[in-house]
Image (cartoon, rainbow, N blue to C red; front, top):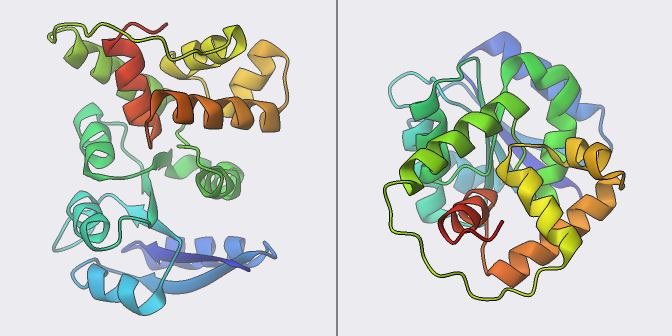
Length: 215
């Protein structure tokens, strides 16, 4: 079954470029392409995407507001934010609103397809510089909280190594290179970490790792 994708971007050229790129992937199907998010809930209901590509700067209502609205009605839909900005607050607000990943637009041609596949397999793709900003923000926030006593989550030594890499902002591919393991092996370890820590997103996993000092 094809992976259904909807595009929200006010730039017509970017929308069309993304559409053309995704059409080259056999198992992708673009079910909707929209220039604003004022009707985003109805649009998502109509085109029934598995994944939404969302520009953060949209007319009338921001992409962050749209994420909140979509996730409230369709919590199962995965949302990948796209932007030219690396602003810490907007990145953090997007993820807190429910976005599952965050990609800079200058990486669209080289990273978009892999990022969508990573979302499909339960990952949270981010450009490395974006990941670093998010984790720095979370570390700064958690520094003001009283650390929790970490229970024994029975992580293996390798799973702790992978978790440490994620806390440090490394992508799946970078972790593979760092630990000399394959992308699929990294993905398998991350899936097990999610299960053992009882979390549903990369943000939640890293927050728990930092606050409970798991690694």
